[in-house]
Length: 308
Image (cartoon, rainbow, N blue to C red; front, side):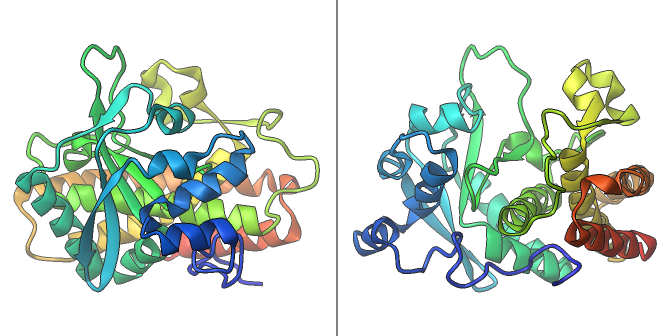
């Protein structure tokens, strides 16, 4: 078995949207393919909520970049879906020419600068929700997000054009920052699929009872959950860091960045590399919570981090 996180969706697997399945076939045949990920959501959550039927109310603007096509969702976000992917305080923002140009530029940039990362996006992302806080919502806006319960779909806000999490913020928007956040969430989706398809964590492991890893660089956020991470959350984060650090290094090796973009990527790289190394060490000391396959994945992550 591979010692790296999946780069392809296994044909015929639960996540194969082209497989023979009555519900998936009905959505494809009725030209509602944008709702396919929501059919999987219903099966993952076992909630009885017909998410795919609710998703039919969405509209899809098709965006194409480097031969890949993505559904950029429009219309009102169904509350039944929003509630179960932590978007109850959000609505889909207007599709403007500026947002369309920036999203297309971000996808194109990723395909040129980090083609391996773009291939991951192509494989594990089908739909995109560009959202914003509802008027009157009393919450801090997310930058980008994804939910293992909703495969193939990623969410992001206008902040994704300015913010490289956790701490790099630019006053000037850039599609290159948006490209990083798209890759961030696409990688989370690939990790979630791999964990669903393979046993990564040892028998008896549960996120609720997991030992916690202290995350010192999140101490200023004031939320206890962000300061102490479960083993599985730290594993997700380490996989994502490996991809993002590779992307940041590729950007920094180019000569077409603005001074602000270069400073932002350099700051994010300098902050991210020690964070990835710290998480790697913590996971290695907790390897009893992994299966033999999970330990192989840790070995692969260690090799990739050492090469950065």
